[in-house]
Image (cartoon, rainbow, N blue to C red):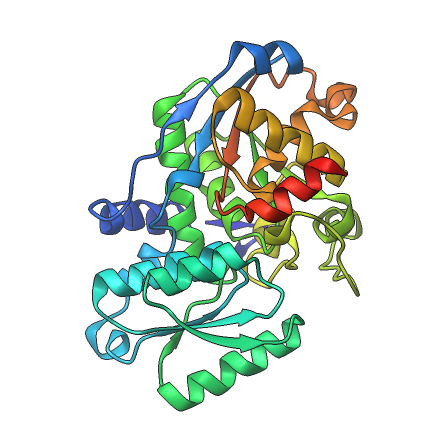
Length: 323
């Protein structure tokens, strides 16, 4: 797909190919709705439960040829991509080397181990994650599957929109968490190919608002530090995701951590879905004053919300509820 003469890292046909490739391995996730949450938001909300999805990196692993695959895959990730890649590699019978920062939530590390990934520790900085991953690549000859800045990952994520718009064709808006931009890039490319007028909005924590700043500046902005309970939303946009976010994401809604925790609580209490802070942020965005009082979104009536990530460190969660 092109815009302004620029070729993106993925397109509608790569997303359709991904859907075919991964169909045997993924779980078609349900869409939930709640009259209570509709009343609270003043809109019709449809929640796509990607927190139930285990096969998030299947497309990247299944698209490797035999010569590439045999040496395994490497990534650096603090969470869901690490577990998804470990599982996809296990299903293909190849090794997965997972570089994980020391501050990653315990439950996410346990998932990697459960799926057979080999954990290699790094410091929390992106520089450390990348340099440890480079060293592992050199030593093993494995293939790097970046958590978001990878056309295969973007194409796989795009299959969410194919499913979502089949399940709820009337959606006029989709709200997606944003971090490195892999998820929202795939969702935006596919949704706007099917329904060009659909709005794609990103939801981002105020303490990690680099995407909002990037959109405002018209170039990638990175932050010296991030400060948010949403540990899955601390990455910055990549050179493959940024052009798609720049061109196809209509706006970024930023929310406070306390709004994220409240939304997470509503997911538990009303939807009965265990979702991590990063995954609940779409609901937080729809309920925020910034969204509800903004005349630009007045005619967003049928809103799809992608609930991504169900890996919750329960000890940390209970502490955050008590604050």
